[in-house]
Image (cartoon, rainbow, N blue to C red):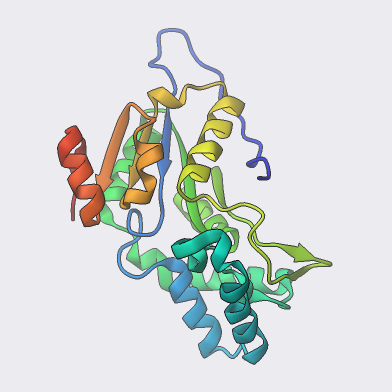
Length: 232
């Protein structure tokens, strides 16, 4: 697993409440509706950026890696980008975020984010979506630090291999721990927002877990543990 992006923390001022992390998931949490990656795939198909080569590569990935990843293999499958020039996709993804994702941001989560920013907390966008998508969205939200999926590349082109970094499940928790250590902050003091039971390892590791429009599995877990539940 690659190291997460290097981050910096502002100097603390005596007498001011301690800086804390606010870890924000993207799909289903900040964003409503279908996942950002699903919408991005449809966008690439409509614009004829994806073709038969990418389709065969994605199918081949499922066949090759189903034994390793089991039911989660489709989450690891980024081979639909195989052969595409990574640099050329950067402006495509930025325009996609601007035109199709910003309008889907949840108002309640935007208010939570602004509250953390006003309080001097450090928000981090921690998501399994592509870094191509997470970066422009983080910039729009005024989030300086983000950690997302990094796809395998060779000579500037995407490869039909497992991602080099994929914040999902326990790997997401490990990345959050690395980020907290870099910042010199305690993950145990953080707030985390998520919508899926796959985020339970992270939610159980922080002081203030918040289930956002949770799927049934997380909703049950949040109810049993007495966690805050935030709905639209």
